[in-house]
Image (cartoon, rainbow, N blue to C red; front, side, top):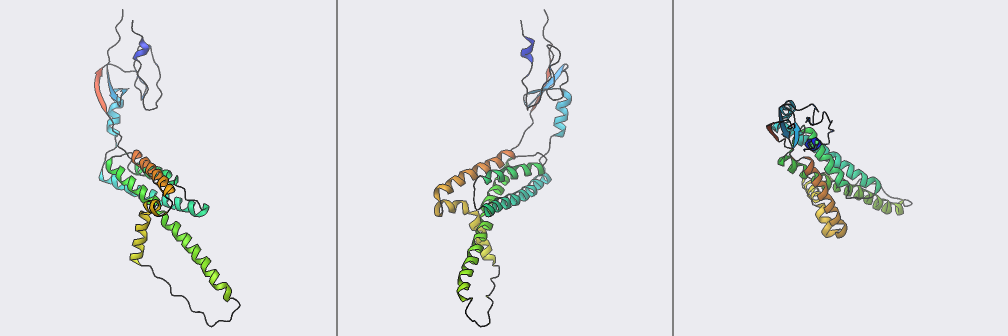
Length: 242
């Protein structure tokens, strides 16, 4: 004799399932009893109304959605870079685990901007933005320490002359921004994770690369496509009675 409890479907998608009358099947989304027809939505038993509703509300991958995802991702990458650099400057500790937070922020922001749409092109952009945010954080960090070092050297050179009479001071010529220098700084920032391995701390650099890869993996996973598979309709045959 068949056990009616075995016909109860396994809960899917973290939703609760309410048990109705013995031998009755229920939709795992609206929890209403299944009549003569049902569908399978990503493996979950679904009533025709819920299946139709989910198919109609499924977000479409459009050009506008992709552009919004990029804009949200760029904003998140800038925020992640600022947070990464600020933490390193304030604490004096450059910790690679911040890459995980950057990957999470970028991935979540892009999905928010696309209204839940994901896919390969979203994943590629998310990974690139995560790498750019983490690597370019080295630029403000290096500028901060360079300015501190320059100020310390200036104090050392001017202190012995405090008690000496000197003529009119001449202002040092100001260095103007140079596009070539700015581009070089940007390229060095982008290559900083690799440079750290070969010219800095090899062990720490390798660990940082691994953590950066994991952060990029976070962004890749968050922006993956989430397909909706609906199969059916199927006949919901009532259990045979003896």
